[in-house]
Length: 306
Image (tube, rainbow, N blue to C red):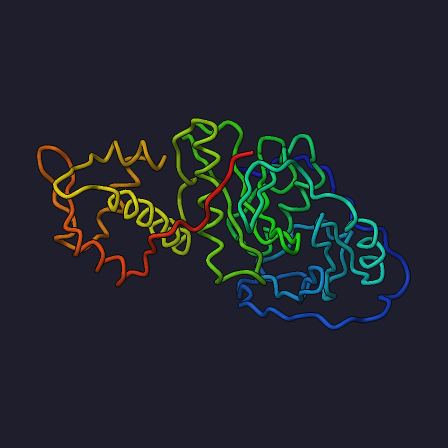
């Protein structure tokens, strides 16, 4: 994804004067890049009440930030300022408004909002700039019109906990371009929730696809885990003696046949047998494989399409 040579600068929260009163923040320390060209321009980013160490160099317009000082960011609209008092004043107004976009998926615990980059351009730019702090492969920050953005919202707290984007027109039929679980909510299994949302939306649109390549090592691990889980649950539905084809698994899961075959390569030998009718299983071996690899019978989330 190449960055356009022309850009519209996202507006920061207007700021003058002192930093204002300092509040305590929950700190999330990550390992920043050691590459001088990637070294973050500010030591921490304060997202609402969470203080986070960025991993990579900001692409925020430098005239709108202060080098070496924390960057204060609204946890709802992702506008930013080097002044904490300006953020708090902004939050009092912003947090009364609804999240950007429209709700397209919901579950008991989460909601997914869809934001059109050409309709809500400033919000999408702010979101893209924020994700760049944690994704070194993120290359589009200002030319956001060709993309749709999806925010994962925790219903009980109304907090945005993750985001992914996808191209509106993908020649490879990708259902996801970039994905990020916000640092305060990482290592809680929410990556699987977001991946499942991308496939639920693909099913809604009748689009069979997968993630944009190449995948990072961590991204590849996450997708293999998701694909294996979906295949496992599909195979569990087989009756003794029944068989299923890779194409039938794809029809049920909306995972491409290529990705299914890649995932099947990770199953232990003897769990699945191939014959002239398709794939058969040894149920006891399948259960043991799932237990050993922490693959659960329950889906990460049961989405309702809105």
